[in-house]
Each structure stands twice: as C-alpha cells, then as structure tokens.
Length: 445
Image (cartoon, rainbow, N blue to C red; front, side, top):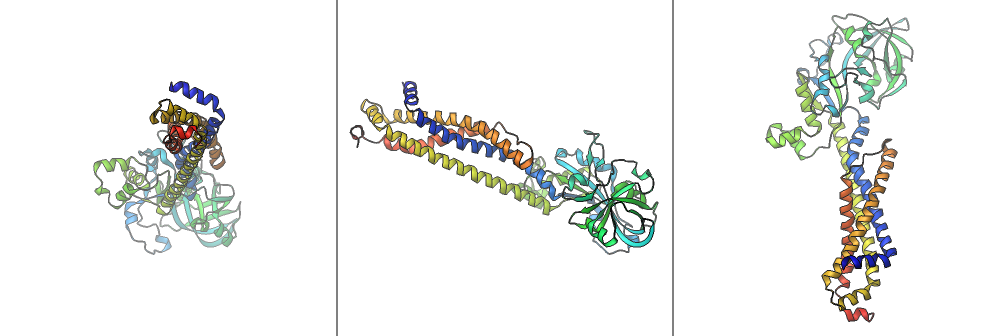
C-alpha cells in the first residue's frame, strides 16, 4: 500500500518533487565539492606553502650546542664540527621519507675576491656552497635530484641557475664552475652576469682557488643576497673539506600541530607507548625532525618554527572556512526543503484529512512523507555527487593547476547528509499537519 501511494504521489506531484530534488542537488553538489576539497587540500596546500622555504634544519650536535662567538676570518672554520655528506641519502630513508620534498646542504665560508674579469681586486666576500639541482642517488630512486631549486622556490634568478648536475664539477677547467651572485653583492661589487671571479679562501690549508663564472643574479630576500652562491663541491674542494657540510635545510610535508605534538615537543618522555606510536607515525614536523635525528649520526635536528607554524595555521584556517561554508550550505538546503515540503503538505491537506478519516494513523502518514523525502534526498544526493566531482576538478585546476582527487568516501557521506536534510526539512510541516482534525481539513479550515 505504501509503495502504491508513493507511486501515485510522484505521478501527480512531479513538479514539486523536481523542485525538492533540485534544491537537494544544489546543496549536495556544493557539499560534495567542499568535502573533496577539504580532504585533498591539506596535501595540496602543504605543497604550495613550500614556497615559504625549508621547515627543518639539521646541524652538527656539538656545533649547535656551542655559543656563537666572534672569530678572526682566518680561523672562522677552525675547530668546527661538520656533517658527513655521505649520510645525506639517509634523509630520504626515514619512515616519512616520502614526505621529504627535498633538502640542500650548506657550507658557508669567507673568501677574498682577488680577480674580477682578470683585474686584480681585494674584497671580502661570503661564499655559500650548496646544491642547486644535484643528483644524489637513493635506494628507491637512483635518479633522485635535490637542491635549492626544489626547497627554495621563492628564489628569483635573473639569468640562469648555476648548473651543478655534473658530479665531476671540481675537475672542470678554470671558470667552468657556475655561480649565482646575490643582488646586493652584485650592486656593491659591480658584478654582472658572465663575469669571471677568482677567490682565495681564508683557510689554514686551502687546496685551490675558487674560480667561477656568474650565471645569474639572485633575489631571495635573505642573507643570500649578500653572498656568492656556488656548487657545494667547488667550495669543499677549495677549503680542503671534502665531504663536509655545516648544515642541511630540509623541506617536508607536515600536518598541523595538535595537543599530542605539543606535548611531545615539551617532553617526549612524558608520552606513553600508545601516544608515542601515534606521534611517531603522524607527519608532525617534530616527529619528522626526531626521525631525521635518528638517521643522521652526530646531528641535532630543529624545526624552523616560523615556517612550520605558519603552514599549520594557514591550513587549519582554510579547513575551518570550508567547514563553515559546508554547514551554511546544509542549513540553507534544509530551510529550502522545509519551505517546499510545507507548501506541498498544505496543498495535500485534504488528502491527509481523507486518509485520517479512513483510519490512517499519524505514524503511517508521517512514514509516507518521510519516504518521499528520503527518495528525493537519494536522487538529489547522487546527482549532487556527480556535480561535486566536476566542481572539485574545476576548483583544483583553478587553484593548483591540477584536478583534486575525489575520495569515494565523499559519496556515502553526501548521500547521508542529503537524506538527513530532506528528513529534517520534512519533519516540521509533517508534524504540524498530522495533528489537525480530519473534519477541519476536509471543510477547508
């Protein structure tokens, strides 16, 4: 009997049902798109926020514990501890290795510029040795490349990036090594693209002059604008520090901090076994830093909190905004359904009065209206999921240049919400109309 009444209701009230389905379709489409964006936006935004730069710094443990003291330039590197370059592949071998976007070792030292395009000069210059786009094989990816091109996308280079892709760069002819000169240094020393520079290291045991050709002018907004940035191997060779680095900057994809990560940050020993496992197996910046400290011997690893904290705050605020918009869409849809169902039920008041006069009780009448609403919710929800899938692709392409992944868990969630808002919108008018007396309804009162 219920099925027959449902079929008759749809047959004679198709226009009203279409309006209800269309209202739910609009809400479901928006909700499914926002849910898909919320699920995938964390990783996408984390990748976009890598433009802030590296968020983890690896230093020698002994060196990090020492206070900073002023030294003569000739003895600036004397007695320093270094990290072993051979251990750099271990950075990608941790539990969260796939979250490591890239890394760049650093070796900073004072040099004296003694020749500029063949003309003798005398000027102190800070030289930074690092990777630009350097091939460093790892077990899972023998062709893996890393360097400043990856972890410092905010670097702007006028001209060309220095090429350090050839591991035999230290054996190249004079001036074959390319370098970037910071914008401020270029202005102060009158250095231009294509200039040839010859530098003498301030070191007790230098092994070679540093001879470079300027390939580009660097704008970074940081200390690099006052430095000459050179491939790491060339600086190591000149300073007789083969295979040694002072620090490593690491860029990693992380999740925002919460109470557990803050507790671990304050006192790791305070975590019980379950909390420790959950913390260790979550991509917090603190847990990744801890794993890196285990992987690189003699190192202390510190998150760069200015970067890591800002990433977490931005992602949290975006997800909160999406949640608010989703809730607003659900409320608006529920109000629209309530309005439509109120109009529908008022128009069918005589039908309801006749059903009650023939013996139908309140539960049966409510069941009829709730069944109609649930069916409208399912149809509107399914159509809304299809629309949301397309809309999320458009949003991803507009914001990130590639479609967002549509998680299939969104479909049952949206169907449940669609049916729920249809039932909620139906409850109030159905509850009111079924309490009327049949004689009042049949006489139009």
